[in-house]
Image (cartoon, rainbow, N blue to C red; front, top):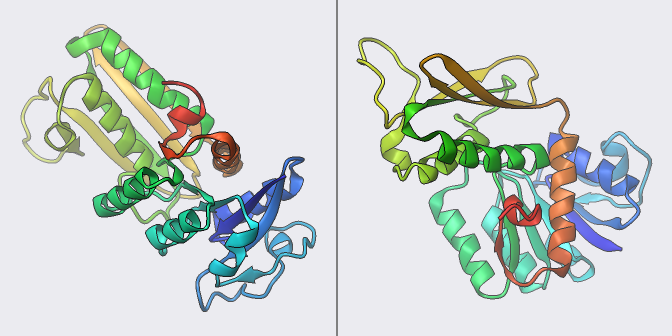
Length: 267
């Protein structure tokens, strides 16, 4: 059994991770962590997730749990790097699905991997979304500069970052395929007399409303035709299942920094 600690266990994603672990045949819940002051501290993680009592209480202390775990999964917005460093020091693998990480945090996680840690870092853990990354790169390479590319993403009205980490990664993949700089090519929405669209633009549009889990569309448009690649998530279970797949991957992987393209063998 692969022993997993969930950080952010009372959050929307954390609850689905706990529930999926409790339903699995090869995984066990080794711990459930939340931020200090959270009202769920001391509660049974299984019951908080909406399921059966599992005997694992939600705690604010990660360190005591690490000696009896194989991996942590962190979707929280708290001490991401500190959690990863503590886990790596204890010999635990690290799966991070938190979006909008600062460049300094990404560099710190890379350094942990270079020192012998095993880390999967991905802006989106969905298997389908990672296939979208792969297909977007391939379609961009095949179609060339004759096609204008626009990205449209929609999420629930409580999402704090914009554009989504998934949309940013889509733009990065497309920019790489066209030998463009993300910073120079991406145009966030359009307003006023901005002039005609250039061939080197990648349009980025964020929509917020309701309880949408996550929709992403990449539009390739040229004279006479349009191609659209779309992924729609209807349940957070798609992200939870992908994160657990990443934890299984790391269980036998060599030390290093990985993403979901590695997990799915798409490279």
